[in-house]
Length: 247
Image: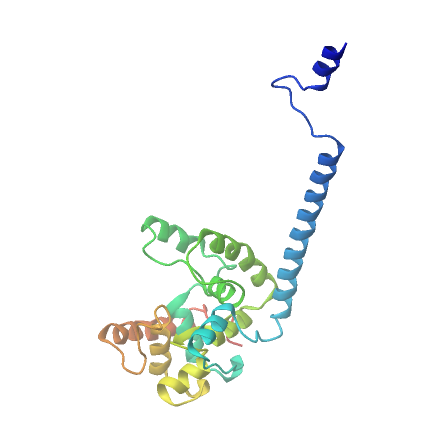
């Protein structure tokens, strides 16, 4: 009898054992907390996206980290109405000529980048704004995936003009220099509203590499790039690709 009870109490090899009621309760609790955590994260993202559609971001993760590293950064918020129109067109021509035509992700640019082996960039201004305002720097797939999910949400809630306004105010233009107002003062001693077409084009030309390029002392490459940007800015104005942010 004792041997039969012992055999009955031991699970047979290969037979799954559910661990009893306590394990079932634990699994249910974990699922419940995961659902609550996911709901909290989604709610926070929605709240921040809606908030910054009208309220200017006080800082960004990258700006904060650079401020810690350098002991401070230069940045002064300026409304879109106080930015020289040619600066807005130059930034779009340089970074995302189809800004007014896509919904945040430029699929044709992504395909071209993939065909080129990833040597060219495919991030839109909308994606760069999401990265700068909400996320961290770097090229990790985790960050890119979150960026790809949040960007259409920003496009749905913000206007194109607002996206470009935020972008121009948080983009890095030099070591510790963020936003077009601080950049205009740093490089040319003027405000963003007073930028000439050439100055605007040079600022746009340094955006991909603000620590390695200078708008005040442009290399031959930056000069050529600025000339190309000026042509591009004029083109998008003529063909209507600047209409979504110029009104």
